Image 1 (cartoon, helix red, strand yellow):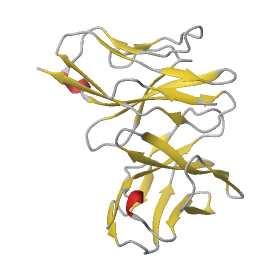
Image 2: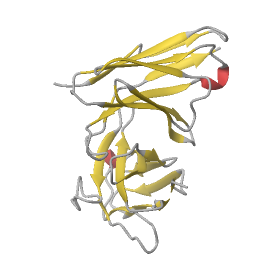
Image 3: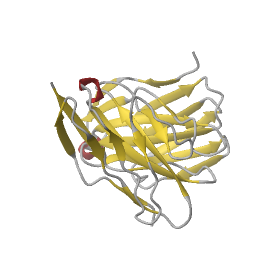
Length: 109
Length: 113
């Protein structure tokens, strides 16, 4: 079964602390993994995708096929990073996106 | 700018009423989707359409129906609304290749009383 698991509903850190938002997945095949972000009262936006291997707003995520994980990391959190973060996957054929339940990141000053 | 527009933004309706949520896009994308967002449950797919003649059920389609009137329009209907359909509903579009280029609408907050 296709599934995305985000075990943490809420993650609270202080400004400047490292952040890791966990994401594990199950998929029979080779999925494409994404992180989406939703700032307060805004629509979901793509943060990054594993294929591009880029860093956006200081966030990175590495696909670990052995552990079926795609954790999102940032070495130094900023207050403006406070938002809801969703991990998602799709098949490489461009099938529909399947989302995790989301993790709310709170960064305190 | 090309965009995905959802109407209405907010709606309160009574149990048993029929309601339609509309989504239109100027992105030129073939694929359109309806998701609902609930606290603690994330986004769950209701229906999706890969082109005008292609409609598919998502994981939670019961109680919902859709209509793809044109490439640019994808409507979601609740035939007889019930309180547990209270949620934030998002429309999204994507290009044909891969799930790259997903664009979400701003959402419709629906409350069923």
